[in-house]
Length: 137
Image 1 (tube, one colour):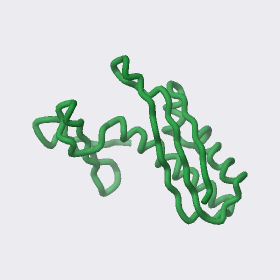
Image 2 (cartoon, rainbow, N blue to C red):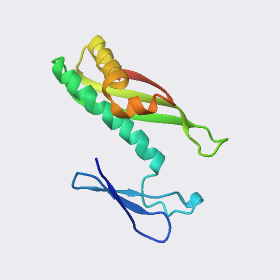
Image 3 (cartoon, rainbow, N blue to C red):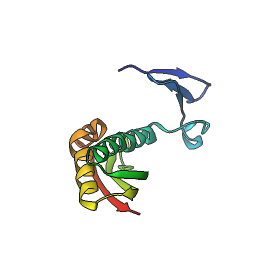
Image 4 (cartoon, helix red, strand yellow):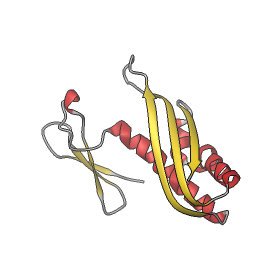
């Protein structure tokens, strides 16, 4: 896996390219000397965790013959603000699903995603407490 990151201004604005056709704008906040032109690096980690687990969840639910109409994930994290670097200490994912779904199957699919298949979750879990909840509408 390879990515490229290119500096875009005299502060911290960067553009990252992966294997897909779209780029990602990255920047620091104004408080840190950036210009708010992109997503913060630590937010990208949370986005990676949420989307990685979503891909696994959707795949597992399909195999379970569950019909998922919609999925929304809210990811909240706590950081150790007393130290530098201010690493994540806890991450909580809230899944909101809708469709023809059996609660036990969703519960099993999420457990498999977070604790077995999601590469991002596996990497983070060595240093961060990760937990999740879900709600079916």
